[in-house]
Image (cartoon, rainbow, N blue to C red; front, side, top):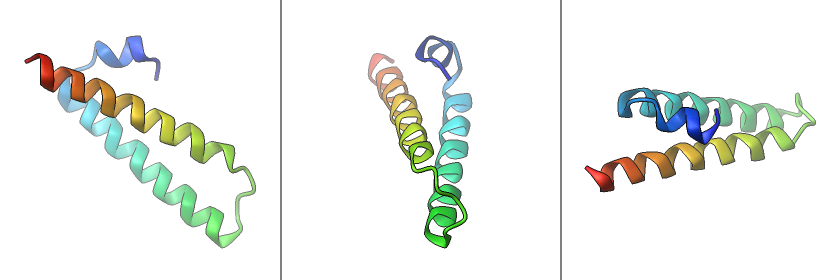
Length: 64
């Protein structure tokens, strides 16, 4: 999700998106530990996505 698209979403939608990303990240870490996945870059991408959503949520809470 691009930051421009994320800023247009409501807080509830952003919280849902954050939950989904964190769940995907947990599943990815589990699969990495089990040796099922060799691509470590996917974890970095998901972490950045979660950080991006958290930043937008923080900005929305401070502005209101």
